[in-house]
Image 1 (spheres, rainbow over the protein chains, first blue to last red):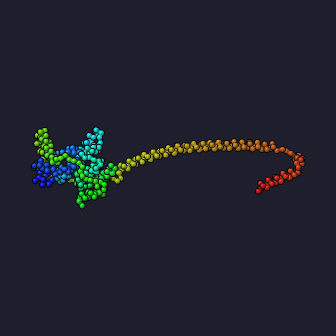
Image 2 (image 1 turned 60 degrees about the vertical axis):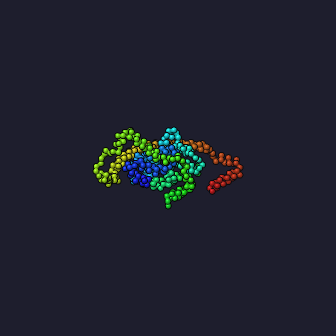
Length: 183
Length: 203
């Protein structure tokens, strides 16, 4: 029965402390896969993605009471997931810099250690190309290419203008093309 | 046009190569991960709540109670009054700035005047010196000319004396005797030669 409710109704129930855990479970089940894949494409490994997933949904539990209903729940969740992923990458970068490693290499290494990885296969080559992109372009490319998200929605999540997002996507595609042609 | 078609045509226009790449997901997720995730996360949240309560039940119970009060209808009546602000008035003719420039110009003028006067007096001195030199040299030159003239006169007298010393006083008989010794044809040849030389000089 809770599954039939829309996001606004679920949030209202959560704020009213009515069946809070059940309401939260419905929200998690509704968006977990989309959020997971957004995170996974950024941090690459499942273990890291799981860590970030837990951080994201614990934050959602703690902040859902303050969630303003003028925004979409889905957009809000995506924003938290993206920020948490980037924070995770940033922290990993700092750790890598302490151990004189490069984070982009670490992400590529993580790709190499994925099951069934074969750099000759186009799907993996595309993943390798994505890892060469700067963070912002990587996020924009993933949301547009894999999630097929409209620029307007992306603009709300990333708090960036549509024009800037279009430019980022264009640059990302061109860089990926160049990488694929040269490798 | 649907969103996915629009995205595809956009991608094709940027890079047909990337548009033709396979889109299947190469990553794997452990079996049952999504089925268990919501339960796992709820378990963690409950553990977090228990931990908070155990840490300080008193603070946890106070967490949602707000001790501050707001005057009745404050939120309804709250308005932000924005007074129309007047832009900063900037004078086109700033007297202070002009005075500064005037003072600077006056100082520069005074320095320039003194410098001109100083250098011009120095220059006049140098001109006077040079005229003195010219005057001296003119006197010297006059003296030199006088001396030279006297030298020339002496020298010319010497020359005249020398020419006079070359002249030989002879009477007509002696000349006739000398000429009688020279053959007549040589004398006529000499006279013709002199005549020819005179003619060529006249021409």
